[in-house]
Amino acid sequence: MIRLSITLVFAVSLCLGFASCKAESNGSTNETQSDSVKVKTDSQYVIQYEDDPFYKFLCSLPRKKRMEEIKNYKGEDAGMSYYKYCVIDFPLLSPVEQCADICMHLRAEYFFRQKQYDKIHFHDVGGKDHKYSGGASRQALNAYLKKIYNISNTASMYNEMQIVPSLDQIRPGDVLIYPAKGNKLGHVVMVSEVAKDANGDIYFQVIQGFTPACELHIVKNNDVSGNTPWFKLDPNANVIKIDNFTFGKDQLRRWK
Image 1 (cartoon, rainbow, N blue to C red):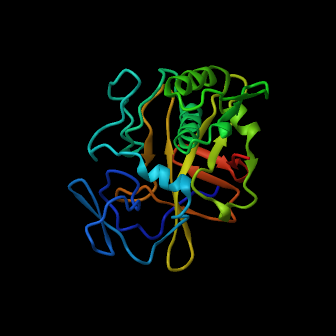
Image 2: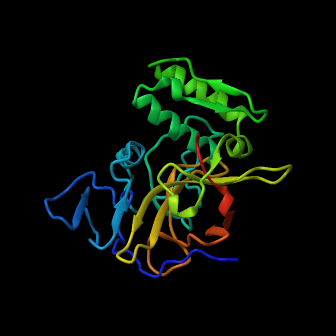
């Protein structure tokens, strides 16, 4: 098994959001400001897909204070500090909004904000496509998503999506997913940010929901020292490991 590792730890240790999203600036070329915490970045790391609209959407999502813990759908501490780099303030719609659901929620929310309502559609577990038809109504969107949560899962997402041809084509919005099968639960994480270092090596971040339903969060890389959300990608690997979860290279997928 080839495990993801990081040989160069990014000079980012405090964050209220994605480590490199430049939502606010203090005027310096090598610092970003997020509330009261300055985030140092190194110019040798080049963020990829900065002009991608979905990447910008993810960066626009508000982040909670660094020390706040992941809460479950009841508003209680979910006991998931092991996985947490930081928490994203993206409210759950339902007590059943788990890993696949929150990825669909993000995609639907993006198109809703873009007023591209016809692009909001997801397959159920039988492969039937369910199109959103509520236009600009937030109430209609929420009702649609709650319905989708009950008829879709990691297996339907997996079948609906296409394989990313090679790992080095990874980009924000892609997912790493292994599908539910029989009594075995599946899991999915979404790629939120991609960067390269001076040597051209690829690093990426992922966000996830969980089972039971809990807040969206950026995943911490527990395989390295320090506090970092960055995972190094080996383009020639057969598997990608994110903490307790191992994904095959054919499980890097993208919506069609």
